[in-house]
Amino acid sequence: SQQGEEDPQALSIQEGENATMNCSYKTSINNLQWYRQNSGRGLVHLILIRSNEREKHSGRLRVTLDTSKKSSSLLITASRAADTASYFCATQGGGSNYKLTFGKGTLLTVNP
Amino acid sequence: DADVTQTPRNRITKTGKRIMLECSQTKGHDRMYWYRQDPGLGLRLIYYSFDVKDINKGEISDGYSVSRQAQAKFSLSLESAIPNQTALYFCATSDYRAGGTDTQYFGPGTRLTVL
View (cartoon, rainbow over the protein chains, first blue to last red):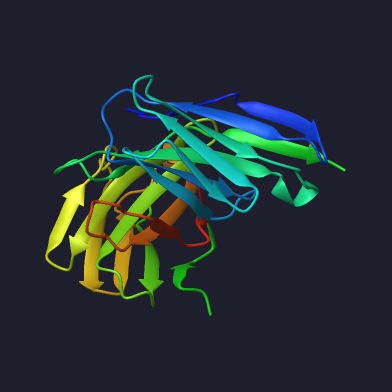
């Protein structure tokens, strides 16, 4: 079964606006990762946040993690048309449960 | 050259045929994975291998088999293809790090259609 669930399923914004996507999960994790997928292509890793971290930045990306609420958010600032893609969160458990479990994704459309 | 390659990129086949999808990597990673992606369902893990002698079933392994021929090669077989195996298939590799992080690197995908 899916561990992470992204919200919203689809998001449409104008270029220059910020985009926020959320991910909720059910069980304890070692880390949470965000991936991007351009239409029909392979996923590309964007950023990883460990369970003992609350916020992380990478370029125009900002990720937060609230383990008490079992949720994460991905913020893309100053969006560009090239950011149009599907975004997936993936959780990794600790101990022997170290496979990644992917959510169903958020489709982001950035209109020029 | 791409670090993770998949062949073929597209395949159309008929019900009952045996199909093999191949994955090769030059990243030197021990861990390799096969996923399928269906619209609205995200990625689901079919099989994974943590080294040449360690192969494990994922959440949807029924109807599939795998072979890890070498560290760099991991093949997925559909012994008798059926239409509901029509999907986009991805191979991935990872470099498990101390501290438990496991970032994955994906191939470009194989679009399989079973008629």
